[in-house]
Image (cartoon, rainbow, N blue to C red; front, side, top):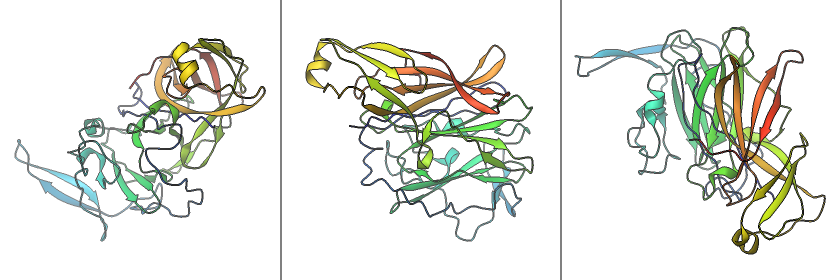
Length: 323
């Protein structure tokens, strides 16, 4: 009985951009039929990452009379469409700031976004593959550069923000997905951090403080101790952190099956918040520890310039959910 949980992203000073995220149930990511391990399809980008692309200028009428917008040239680029219903975003294709009928999500969060800090408005374009159940996101920067996010499950809800996490004077991009339509949003999620590569593009940061799988899934390992009539002790293997979860008698009697001693399970990073700690930008992460309990572990993901790695620090329990 693997338990999985994931990470979310929020906004922060240093980067004038933000979005929201949530996680999927323990058994999947919002009614996925199969886990796709062989991800051979790539995003249909406007251009290679970091390179300029040809653009069209289109005139859009508004209350002030009208303005010009810059859009990538693409013969087969579909017109932005409304989401198929009030709560399902899976089959939306177009710019995220134009998902007008996506009522379960704040598309306003994408309307004014500057992920690279150049004072130009940046946009995110979404395509999806229903057969592979994958979504492909392209960040279209205001300066003409583009960057393709790795393929992600199309049932996830994207969230994007940026901050100078490694304090090198440039903004890193934090991209996460939550699974708002899941029966337990604390038990799944996806997360990537992208660092400027010095050539106008970005490269994915290796997060070896977690166990990682395809499509941005990040895990910690948990071992459960002997439960009482109302509590379950646990230990996080990666850090040695130990705590006791107060779940109540009903949870023990109705949901809990005591696992064999010494057996470990996966928990997903289900939420991530960019924030300032002592003047330094860090990522506050959360992971659900028990299915359908709502209980989450919290910790900070902090860049260590001594070894050029992101490290887990300040682990704590319990941690409240923040959307």
